[in-house]
Length: 583
Image 1: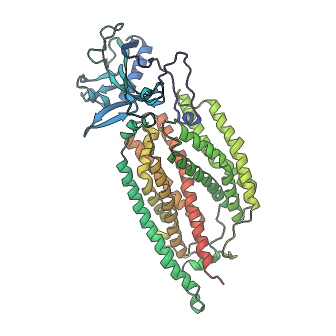
Image 2 (image 1 turned 180 degrees about the vertical axis):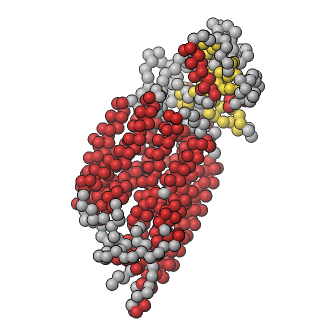
Image 3 (image 1 turned 60 degrees about the horizontal axis):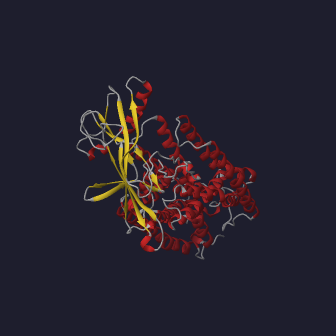
């Protein structure tokens, strides 16, 4: 609900990000004027007659909402109206929404918000919060040389009151009960009180602080960052050891002058004639890498801007809008990277390459999104995206992103293919029998564990902010985690790549992409766990929606991590083969 105080009501408009996230803002019937306190003002009375099926359905809908702990989200002057209450160890928790009501079960157990009042004790009864005490805090500018006042906080307290006289409510009396069995008429009167209080200590710029203080705590964050840093240090140590000691020894040995014992040497030098043999399905790999580059740059810029505070939670939908616009504008690097790599792999079908780069993954995401939207539309949800917005997204994609991809690809194909340090032999070499750990699948499965270990605590907060309507504002932490993820992905891939080359297995192109890309599979497993352990979702439609949106996230993350791993490994292989002498 949006609480507007103007008379000529117009619906507030939403930006692209809000529309995509399904946020809709409506005006509400609660009216108030500045500094004019209201005491127990009547809003309306709803009567549910027991013989009318329409009324029964509406009341059932209301009860179901209370049973599933549905929340009101109200906004005043772009501030969420919060309900603050004390939790254990004398801390205040501010919830940016408040429940419609609550339920005492047939066994007499008070669920959710019913624990706040000992009067809520009748078995199999719903208690509806039909009265709210709204308190608006403002900062007066008189003493500081500017006229007027600014809203710095909006809090409310929900109450359940059964008024004896519906026309002249007193806002006192027993709680408003809605029996579980609909046996007699139910009459609910909605009322509200408003009070204003002046507080010149809170600055307008820091008015969000009281909400953020009670959000999930920062010490967990530091713990997770330390945890990730330990992983990174461990990996860096391993990589450094390999780079310096083993590689140094290898290179010294390989570059020795006398070649008598060169016949029975083993290790990664043996595969120098095959290590740059183009991979199978090079087309698909180059397309993935082009799109991965696009996603990588988009994520980097978005997080950087969020760190600088341009995309704060007060700026609704800014994060999503920013990502979409950046993604659209970054078609050129995608086309360039894809074309350049495809040419390096010796590919000829450049038209197919460009078209796939421009259409494959965005097409999958759009199709998924469109299906989710159809479900929302069939269910009659307000979160369904209007047809106009879908057309606008398609126009952005085909009108801006696709042409930019073509431009990038044009430049990519004009450039010469990437020079390789060693020549590739005519005849492919036999790959020796591999041990269990150097086989492709175990290597790939192991490679995803470490990067996932770095991000999974952040992931919990991000999933909460998407599905449980909590604010996510810790972009500083997220940027740190992004850097850590980048390092971990590269290092894990380089390590495994080195072990494979030592075992004389030279198929590293796809493997390097999949090793770090496998993190996305763990992400999916975690999302499934989150779904069953944290969300009380019922109904097929909601479940399909959750997994539909999750699969979009997983695909994007797969391309993102895979690209990091591939380029790290590509650099590493180029480096080590450029320093050995090959006869």
